[in-house]
Length: 222
Ligand SMILES: [Fe+2]
Image (tube, rainbow, N blue to C red; front, side):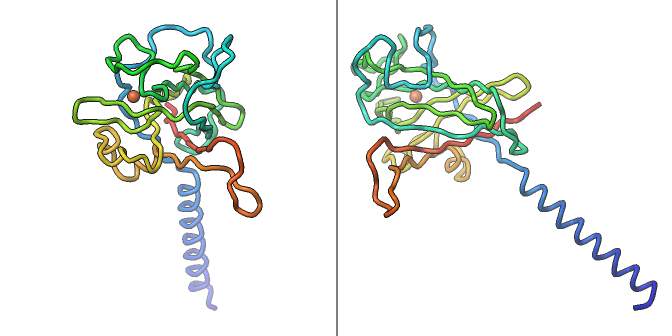
């Protein structure tokens, strides 16, 4: 190879490698932000003695909450996919009958005294959080609108944009008609819809224990 064409070849190769490296880096380090959704009218306004990450058990009560127990877990990252340590993750939701512990909830359904309607978790070094809760009941938002099972969530930490959103259960029959969920793009809907699954043994058969669902969250750092 002559000197000039050799230099040209090397230059082109280096540029191509650089482009590939750059493209690879951008792809590997970009996390799509979790879409925000309305807070709704039932964010807790009264403090609770017990606000830990197990909503199925109220401190001091011997009975557990009614409804199907589920575990929701995941990781909080920033837009560059770096784990967010020490983020506060709050959830609030209706009990199995579809009622919120909020004076403004007009639903005539009964409250469950053994359900902890609001809980908090702080992410660990890896950005991980977990909640034990129950699948919330459906409730009528208006006379023509039934809300699917959903868990409200807020995530905050200094230096990050606060996120308020809602998490849905895959296969809920009311997802398809929900005005809030359907106002999101399909990608965003998938982002906030969780597949709660039974754990399986080595043979692929479901084993006892609650269904578990992974909900990873991405928030923007300033
Ligand atoms: Fe709600």
